Length: 376
Image (cartoon, rainbow, N blue to C red):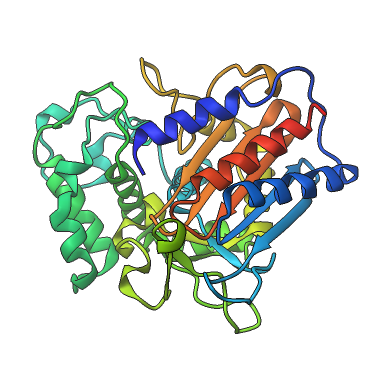
């Protein structure tokens, strides 16, 4: 997915509704169901799921469609959905949790984070927050390129070793982008994941399981294309293509997700219910999992022109319908599509998920209807 599409979606959602907004309630369920029906009918995705979250938790969720194109097995609320780049907010928050534990520092020099790695002097003064804000001067075309995507799945090294190799290549030369200017790059979050691995001595996946999934009770959380549901049966599959050309992709196929080394930038999956638990943290000042000041740090955009990007979130600072800032992000590995919008001042968040890479139209349509219901 390109940056332009992310930016246009964020702008569209910001303008989706105006006027006074009250927190959602269970009494809105009929309206939300109607909105889901309408978005599904208008855009025709393979499957589409949505949810509304308040400070108390998930107050409504619904799903339409089938697990695989041409099949009759319906998608369910127990299915797990690939979150793509919405994983980035989890990686940033995980680093924040290490800060809360006294194990990490927002302003740690790169040499302290990566001892023994040769770092070009042009990186002097760059902090890990610069990478999280996509303002460090990293370009994916140079840091990763087609060679990474063609060879990473067959790389025999461990995932931490693969990520460290990307970091060594990035930091061993001067930035190829402009430091301080916004430029979205997955390699930024691979570096954050590698820093987490160096701090903890464990893989990013192990730390996510121990420090995020387990304490928050996200029992459906995992990595890569989700393969089975909790009953051991099938799950929604991702789809490539559009219209009549859509094809279901077996999650056992290596091409069903990006290379696992990309994990910190975008390989997490979970159920809608568990994703709602995650988003609730941003309605409750960290929910006790993070210190309130750390949760605020995650929601604060980096300084400078361009996209108001916080730590894993696009964060427009003042949105009329939201009564303040909004946190929003899209995620897609080209086979799935996920959209989240959080309005902390109003105590409400929205989820839209589709099991097709060309699902942006569906998640955007649903998101507009869910946000719009608040003013009905």
